Length: 561
Image (cartoon, rainbow, N blue to C red; front, side, top):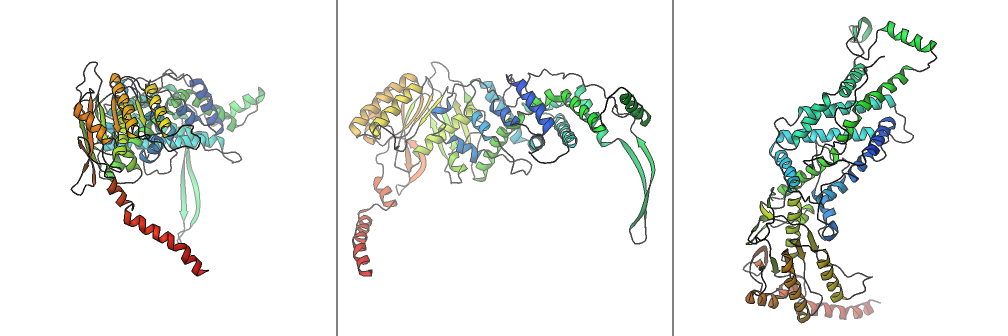
């Protein structure tokens, strides 16, 4: 057999196709990935090729630090439950959630990156054809991963057949890309262009010829004789035609002459060894293109996860949107924030009913104090606003029907934490540590979420520290949301209007003084502690009933004994 030698790849190996970045980022570990891919093709053991490709995949620069918000927002749990990847009926695909988490936790500094992602999501969500083609390509990528990672120790398999199967999947993937996303205006068009460019290379044509040789070496004409009882009586080969237009096919005479020549020259190898050499040569010709395709599996999961979140919300009767997000303009304070139909995605991901609300503020650079009863939705509101900002700046759907936001350089979320066995400070000390950590992490213009500030001490001391914090916060021009039960203190601040940029919202109540999970302007006049106590069975009558029961219990046990 005398194949035409594959030409070097036309595309430079350092150019990595990306669905997450308009300008692909070069990978410093490309040579290491190439070696891992060669080993996976040869042995059927990838050594973690796909996970390594995503774990080390470079992301666009970000000023957000996940340590300041990810834990309090339960971001890992949200990705696991809310970003559900479903494609082509496949429900058991292995999803790299760590990569999705890393992408969401690092919103890009460059707004073009988020715009690029939003446009891809816009086309995927508005075109059923593009969505179907995207899912089909993802399923192919999963099958390719399984083929490269499918061999296990001690399992017998035909190496040549497995390698040919890998090449079949590689060809299908490039063919599918080149034939899909016709008319796309977003980054999806890059997939089509990439597939088309690969199909023009000599390496691709050599792969097609080898696969065609494997599948179609010759054509047999057969006559089958069937008896009256329907059983086959015999068959006869009428003719045999060998392919003559495939560069891998030689005539029988030339094949025998080639073997005799190799024998007298001292070479000893079988047809299987020749095929193995051909497979290696052909794969080498397309290897760089496959390297560019591998990271796309994880990037596609980011979009499929976002679409899964959208469908999860719709199943709960809620709407998501691709938001308007504006840059923060220096010296411009009056930039309103609007979140219409905002809901908590953590509740939806957990299967809990979420009540949407509207949140509109006349300016973004403000400190918003939130008051109202316990279990009125204050902490859930902090989570909702923070996740909406995070997803918006990452180029994803946000949990609101309509959203208009201003970009921030970072996010700090600090919710009330449980007392730890190993903590060295009391509640006041831990609160002061929390405040110190806040100012250590907080940069100008960042977003801040503080739950129950200074609740760990008596009101007189707490109010003094509280006022110090919000006064100093104004110097950083943050987008701050703070919940508090210091109602008298909050009412005084609203009345005096001495601190610039303070805004006040409260939990809405119905006619029976029950929380509506809506928020309106103003300061709450009561925390409705008596309502909460009654709901949880902490009234005088119920507590006295428990006391009487417990006092009668020893006597009852004595009579029984």
